[in-house]
Image (cartoon, rainbow, N blue to C red; front, side, top):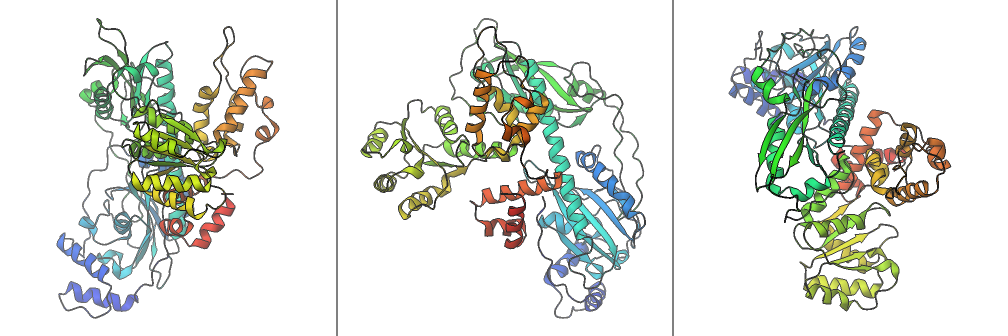
Length: 622
């Protein structure tokens, strides 16, 4: 979801129009002209933009735009509503090249590029630079042809990393003193819907890559790696065999083979969702609002075709062996690679002497973000605090982090099992070179918390991992401990915030099947019910359900929805959220998580009032 803010009070347009005329004729400017507008006019002059521009340049459009592909269904639903009005809707990429437009309005002369280098100050350029909604009215523009235009633009952000992918602009006739712009809601809603579509498509490609990985890893003991530049999947055999250098080579190979590249050869590439026929060629539009001429088809590049879509062998460093690399394709584009690694012919497969990787089940954005941050902090043997609701996997992640950095024999203390009678055991363990894992820090007695604070005062770099479940307000002593570790803390998302991970968690939570009995599988209807359930007990609750079904069900075949407990089978009583609401909910949760639950700071980061944030939290039952 894009961030917004209330538009500041704008200067009167008539004096601003007169100031612009004085600027263009080289006369001194009057007082009261906003500094940012004067700076924008000066940048346009520095770039050599002509204010009386009538024939803007026509740069080559992007060869293929993933943003336009995702946005087109959203934009085409809106286009009919713009046909009869006096406004236009424009989509640009991250370089402000116009990808699509619809509608009509004043100032509709041809313009393929909204960058300041080409047309001077405008709302799209301002939104791209500030990463938030921006408005430009009449004489604030540099070009003469936009003096009777008011425009509002909203950046479109990538769901994975927040990178600006482009902008959505709504332009109409000059609206004097209108704040916010009358098209602001449309621009915001369009950008949010496009971001939701991008997120859905990202999840689809991740599942295609996972399918390809699972097929390649079906052979027992196969060393298989799947990569797409964002995700990395390794089988157990590959995790034990590959060195970090070998994995880095495979990462570079995946990047060189071009995730998102369009190809036409399907002979040797995984593509379980291949559709017949070529995709529609990318097209561009012409201004703040014009028609959409088709782009000529891109010429076929045989060298690119050969390197981008055909399987090949790759020798890996460190004596690891040979990787048979196969591109993974989806809807005509290469989205990643799957590599099957064979050890050298004269060596047996053996574990590599490197630290194992952190590899807990889960591929969703919230889970990857949390575990990546935890892994980064855990590389140094300094205190680390893992927080989250009960059952979110804090202890499992803590053990994996310790194993990954080589602390194979930590001292584990569980405060939930009763008072820690001998806090000196902590210092003894640390003095012996052992790491210390302290579970349920919220259950520590006052004396134990005081002893732990004293220990950290003496040894601020102690190899200590704590798990903490928020609940009742902590006392002053425990609050001091939490404040000490705040800079090195990670909050794990609840399972309801990462429903996409449930399908990957299920086989990990199921008991190993007994001989002669097939593993537990699930119907699609049952999986959907599991993904909709809020899981107040998180992974722990899901694990109990899976084990109970594996041990007690009397029927064969996949688990059906009717076999699930009533609360899970019937689903939550709340209404189903739309893609736009899901995107907004995710953005709110991410902001709250990044600001430690501080609602005032989260609201400020989102560009909304605190009262609005509270209202949305109630609406989404957060």
